[in-house]
Image (cartoon, rainbow, N blue to C red; front, side, top):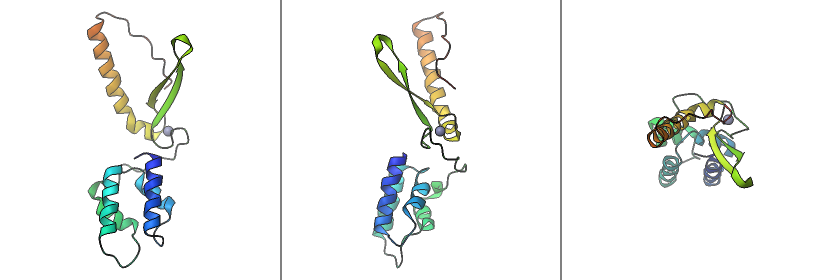
Length: 143
Ligand SMILES: [Zn+2]
């Protein structure tokens, strides 16, 4: 989920169980997870009777097997805010600015890079099909 989604959901957890984990703890636990599934886990936990506040372990158990990411969390990245995506503004024709998205150079970005690779490969195939024999321009994206 996005940092914003994690923040909102973490706030919800903290409001629901004020004596449970701190908002920041919820946030870092939620961030690598799927937003929809985490929301479902929240609803299930809220609906089930309990004697004390919700714990992170209960949450992970409710979320399911994929609760803990297979790879450890990457170091926090200020540039992409751990989303792995960077938005690059590039000057376009007629003084217009176009916004391009690319994978960040951090570990979070490494997790995303296969997506941009797929997109680039797809675009290359498309262009090769449309313009046989074209020259491939050098990449203008910083790596
Ligand atoms: Zn980054």
